[in-house]
Image (cartoon, rainbow, N blue to C red; front, side, top):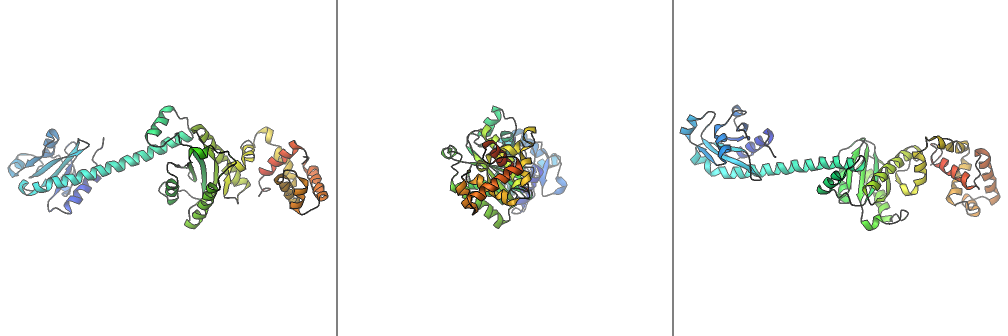
Length: 378
């Protein structure tokens, strides 16, 4: 239930007295004066207000009646209503014959201010509750009751969304222009700040687009992310890098996409620190290995590739070998060398690493090691 507080009561008083040549009082649901043009009357009990609270009727008090009541002066006292509920009392001090004409006008203004404040409080509550629900929807156990509540709040948990994570160079709040831009660019998107330099943007997408195959990322979406980085630079928004995943059609899938995209940001900070825009579908295998890089089974994978640390020419050769799927002639042309020179380099790589680039399992070891070794990759 909405309750009058002192700040709102005094705001009502100040607005009314800026126009009226009379003192105005606002009383709470107990008849205590919580707003007044006469500071000496604050926190005192108003017997006229108590009568209004008891009858829900306008109570006029003339000089004779005022002399019989405690803490009361002549005037008009009116009930303040909100959603057909009695919230408090408005009093205008003066001869009832003179101030009566102002009563309904000031009462209407006061009730409009209360309704405005109630709506602001409701919006703030819905925003705070929405952020709490988003945190549960994306990271915690989320019972069906919370999903239903999110639906009632208009969060549309069934909407397909794309996880877009942004690493920030400094903390910001939900009123920052960057957050406002993201929220308005794609209606029904979710924005949530974490850590506090990590911004989750779960971008709403059309269901048809969310069902596209993962390698069919649209140029429009990729351009939008690149444009956002350009705009961030121009506006001074603190975006270090952006990582995206494919669209998810369910909450469990969206949670997994957010977790994987967080791994992608961590991977990029160590392996690709100069790259500001990353797409999970381009780096799914390296990120998967990065997530499990401390596992005992994975610990010797990076060791082989590290032996090429002092041989940048061999590293470049290996990159072109990966890029051209082991096609010798195309790879040699890309490097500007003869096929025999390429064969020599590949043999040297095999000698140094113990992994033969012509063998599938060894090539996979080299590929994974190449993409998870800090200081060796671009």
